[in-house]
Image (cartoon, rainbow, N blue to C red; front, side):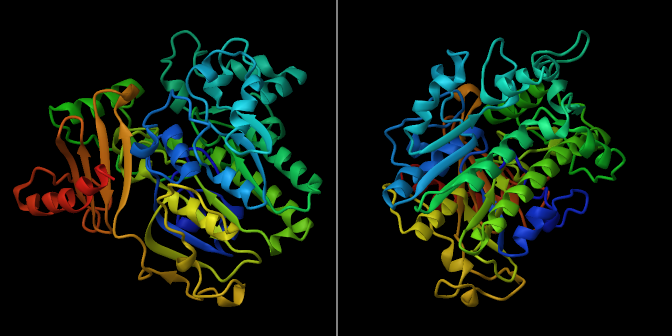
Length: 479
């Protein structure tokens, strides 16, 4: 898993500007679900849904800056009950409030994180956390031992040099002060390889490798930065949306103002993407090392390998960066499922949700999770049986049945002012602000794949808008 990996920032998704050979190989041995929506386009709410199999309004975690509840039934606890050893290496983000803010030594909250059902924990955090004075994590300790911590911290948010807009530190793109082999991505990937090389238990294992990149700030290593320095990158629709003067419009305008991207140009978006792709390619490189460790032990023959992200990255589309909105760059994620031993590749256009991946893992393990709302993807992955001989043999499958509708939710900024509920079918995406009773967006994804023409207030679209609300949003809000 990577943090903030955009759905189409993959070679196998048709993006010839980004170099992701290992993920492309994974897709070449499995099924890539091209239309996967996260349950919330923000780190903590999305991760809460992924570990519980429930929607954001059911977990109650609808914005960052909250601590998750260790009493929740979780995927990891269910796998433990099914006889699995569980391990997490990298970012969990289970702590988001006082537990994360109070201690300087973040190793002190390890017991809290383990209580979600984790036998082996090697936890890390994003760069914003690393930039706080005196913070200690495994990675900051590692850099301190190499006399590189000060150089690393000097590039982080909160440490902008005089005269530089602090907001631009996230998006302008910087070459890392540490060499590639000492980056956090390499640090986590190498630890995952070591864990696999040293695993001796007879139990089956569940290993969740959770990279922090390509989450902003955009800081890529020198090697990949050189690879993308002159790359030709086509930016998305860097066009300001037409925003109404209501609570929804004010939310969107404030988000653009806060991130400082109102003046973004296609050239500026492309430059940001070069560094974002550099970070993505290093994640792919370390995934290659992890897959190599599996092959070296012969475990690629009996291990399910799944790749996904918690949410996407706008990357300048609609003059926006980061996430927190429901455009496809933010709300859709990569999703690759590779069965043991691999199978002939297939791309599915079925509508899928992140919590369906949770249910798929439970299905694979023969485990149950109380309250889970996902639908296993196994019927979409195979015809029948459990061996690779039974997997479907078509290169593209746009007709396979998925969900009729998928959902995503999020509270307004800092958990106040709005509560957004999105429903998307194969053709339409509708967004409703429950807090303010506003129909916010309606896009015809078939005619307008770039989501440039909001039809929500057009008289000719009133029937579709009302049907989307009546048939999908209203029943969902009371579920």
